[in-house]
Image (cartoon, rainbow, N blue to C red; front, side, top):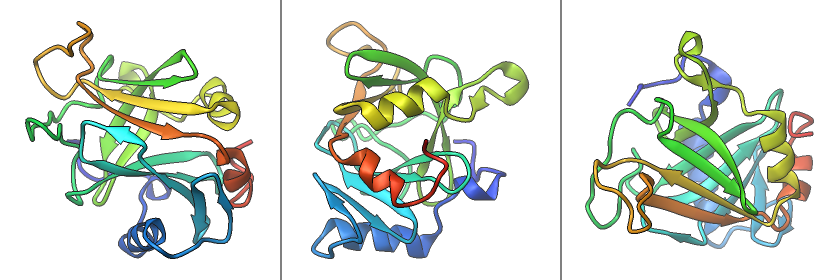
Length: 185
C-alpha cells in the first residue's frame, strides 16, 4: 500500500471511523435515505454484496468529494476467500468503478484506517487524481456502484482481472451527500 495519504482531507480519522461503524449498527444518523446515513459531515452506507472484507463506503463533501471504503479487518481490502491483497492499487488498471453500466478507471490508496478511492491519474500524479466530474455526477444520479479490484494475480471467473468486488446501493446517496457539504455537486 502507499501508506498514509499526504493530503489531510483524504483521511477519515479514527473517531469518525468509529462513528461510521456505530451508525451502521443501530445508531440512526442525521439523514436516513434508503440505507444512507450521515455523521460528522460524512455520508455513508454499508456494502450490499461483496467477496471482500469491505463493509462500508463513505463520502465526504467538504471541498472536493472524498470517497473511502472501510474493511472489516480495520486495514487493507482483502479477498474474503483467499485473504490476500496487493500493494499496488494506485497503479493504472487496478481499480474500476461501475455505476449503472458506465465504467470509470479508478485508483486506490491506503490511509491509516481506510482505503481512499480516487480517479486514475497520470504518472506525474503517481496515478492518483481527484474524482472526475463525470464520476461524481454518476455517483449522485446512479442506482448502484460496483467497485472492482485487481488484488490477486488470478483472473476473475469472467476472465477480467478484477476478482474482488463490492456493490453499494446509491438510492438516497445524493440526499445524504447534499447534507454533508457543497463539494459533491
